[in-house]
Image 1: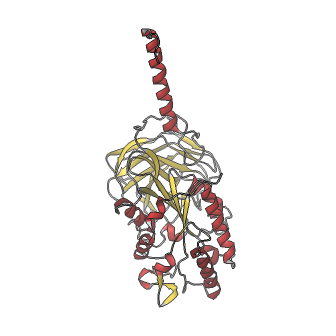
Image 2 (image 1 turned 180 degrees about the vertical axis):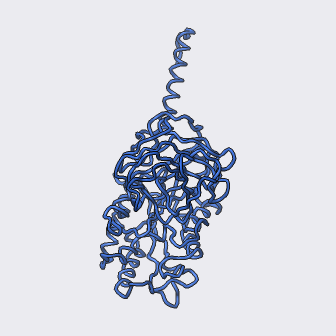
Length: 440
């Protein structure tokens, strides 16, 4: 379009307006729309101290489902530092951390927090130059309301995959019950005083098999297009896997996605909870702990960052835990509800057949009949978009009601490391590439 030339002042004004537009767009892209304690899976609204480069995207690299309030922590851990060790599935140039107070009875004020690259796998010491202080909306401390979660601001930290990260938090005052993920199969650490900035691990003398407060790590990456979420029970959680070895079936799956030619580049997010059921929540004397899959699906699956596919391994505890479900059709209906909710987001769902539990204390022909009925429905294609047949690869051909002994950890329910490996190998990676049309 032709017209009179702009004056120097008008040209400068136009350039300034364009620059302002670019800056505003960048802030919108990198900071998201949620508040500091807003929707899970979105970045906080506040401007970031370290804005990522334009190339890349936020994708979940690690997660753990908040499962319960830790017994005996009515006052929390005042005056102590918690150092969680987590194992990521993706690399990137920046990272941010989610902290959860889902099961807290009062607001949780985290005075200081940090993120670091571990110097050695599973150890409490940080790699040289690998310690980063975390901020929340530009502040060192953050208060997380009861029942909510918050994301930190992003920090620059060069990460290769896989990597062990250290998420450290310090709470100075009593804060109420601590939100945990038990059965972490990973040693984490505690220390007296504010040790969040300690690069060394000498002060972290107490050990634990819980993850406390930490529920997700997202990375800014060009390596992947999204993440696959594994929703499951103790078999997905990795109960019986070697502690500290990262031998859950989801860890083996992450390895396949990183190394196999033609595999989709996806992060792997483990949202298994030991004892979890499709239809009913509650554990022990608590009706709140261990929420059902139906109750937690939005939080633990749909709200995860960059989720592109879902794998569901659930139903065993509906059959085995009291009150026991005796109608496989009811469990199948609950699973279909999960699939329908995933389809509303355009997500394809792969479902697993239930692996054998014959020989498990308290089981018998009635429970086996329900398992077989549910597996038949799953294999029919009337429940999930795709099926991974964990039952077929784990069962003993000579006694199909039981795990093959070489895959049995010894309790006749949970696989050992070799069993978890064969589970990961059974999944067709091609199905993780697909999407379904979202419901209008």
